[in-house]
Amino acid sequence: MTTPLRSAKGHPYARIMGVAGYRPDRVVTNAEVCERIDSTDEWIQERSGIVERRYAAPDQTVCDLAFLAAERALQAAGVSATEIGTVIVATVTHPYPTPSAAAEIAYRLGTNNAAAFDISAACAGFCYGLALAQDLIRGGSAEHVLVIGVEKLTDWIDLDDRSTGFIFADGAGAAVVGPSEEPAIGPVVWGSDGEQYDAITMTQSLIDYRDNGGERFPTLSMQGQQVFRWAVAHMAKTAAESLEAAGVSADDLDAFIPHQANMRITDAMVRALKLPDHVPVARDIATTGNTSAASIPIAMDHMLSTGEVPHGGLALLIGFGAGLAYASQVVRLP
Ligand code: UT7
Image: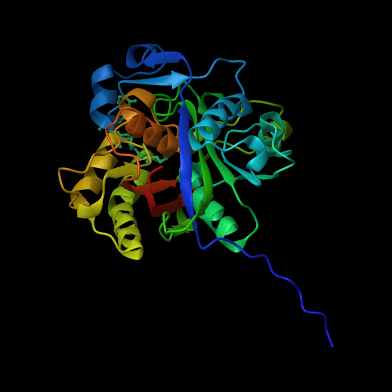
């Protein structure tokens, strides 16, 4: 007779207990960006909605940015670092393939040797992390999970490239996810369209950079129009599917918090979803720029701390970007 295995026993549901964003101090205006690219303040505002963005200090690392957001999220949640069982960091700008940013952050926060790993899902990374966190808690692998979206994109973009130099920025956002008696994170609707893997990619690999004699450090390259068209054509549908999966309608929402990619993409999704006028929409890109995996938690924190959306309200999230990867879910705000 074989010995039966014990299985982990999780909680029925999970919820976001606290969220926080960290925006670096240095404000960079469109005028400053236009010192390096052939563009204008008017063009940037009209095409992207960006008025200004934040850049990290040269000596601030991805882990430094993440740590500041994580500390604040723990405080907002009323959870101590030692209660965190898993740290998930969504990032594409941590400069080490290994070890993970998550392991360093777990240590610096003073967790009790929490499990720690990074995920690479670009601008969809925070929503991917949230989906994993809820499954870890429901599956019994963790009690509290810290999900961080963080990017220092200024290390990986060419500030002289006018197709990317004005849009991307630096920042971090973090959420503490813990057990709940009621459903508070809806089913994730997610996927990837790998046929378009080169729509957002790097100019070359680090191996090629080494083997080519170290010429032209790899930087982000983006087929902006291709990604724009894909997002407008498909992302509202994905968001609508996640509303349906959660059993709520657009009218029930207290907030719509899409990835802050471009104000015109947000506007197109609002129209396609027929979002009622009473639902506040995150428009954080105007002053934060596109911070990839960090944009949703930064915007969420901003909307909650300014009182624009109520604590406990329902928010529709959707992240999308390189891969092309996407993920959407409805959450109850902390
Ligand atoms: O976060 C991850 C996912 N990323 C996204 O979702 C980004 C999606 N893409 C976008 O947001 C937009 O494509 C951009 C904001 C990046 C670009 O806006 P666009 O309206 O798609 O511009 P475009 O590339 O179609 O270029 C339109 C015109 C072109 O000139 P002509 O051919 O019409 O004469 C470009 O040469 O604008 C010109 N242009 C610029 N002009 C001034 C392109 N970049 C610039 C610039 N400043 N920086």
